[in-house]
Length: 245
Image (cartoon, rainbow, N blue to C red; front, side, top):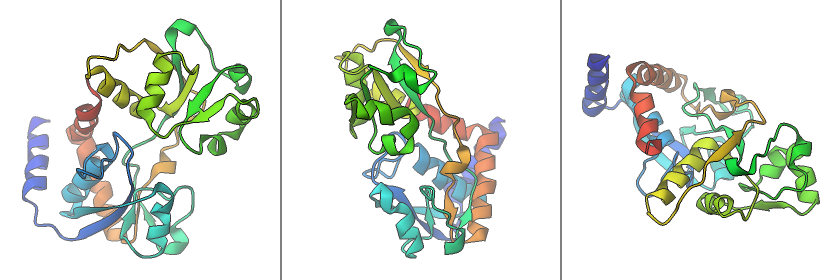
């Protein structure tokens, strides 16, 4: 395993890049995407998979999240991190294997002893979520919004703080995004995190987060490189870089 990982890293470092792949990403999705440094879990996984599978060099191009598939359809980029639910096959897209999976859960303080298994369990609770979550999960969040107990906050570090301080009962977040911001706040020394409880309410669907490529060859190279990252342990190491204490 060590030799496989070493060979992978040597290949990534010394490869003669076959193609530059301009890929559309959302503007800022910590810890998956940091535009200011071209880093983050998703950026690094895709970049290393493209390099390992075919010697390609990733060139991230950043857009407001909703414009990512628009940029692909307009021919502004060679690839996109997601299709946001719109089929890109009619627009010349070739889907790759999922580089990452976003896994949204309800998060509460363990001390509250709350159990969330059905939409009715949110009755009377204050819920804070990311922008547009009510449209993605109307069965769960529609009644909460109608009751005036639904709030949205794009700054997800504030979501962590508000839950920890008891200002909201429930946070709806990707579990890794929440963990990242909790770790960042804890490292400041002024934040004392309480124990949390995660409540799964939907099945994570990896196929919803597939990158899409204009070239079938580049897609195949990406898939091969991604498989190599996972086999070597490098894939897990990229996640741990951002999410381990």
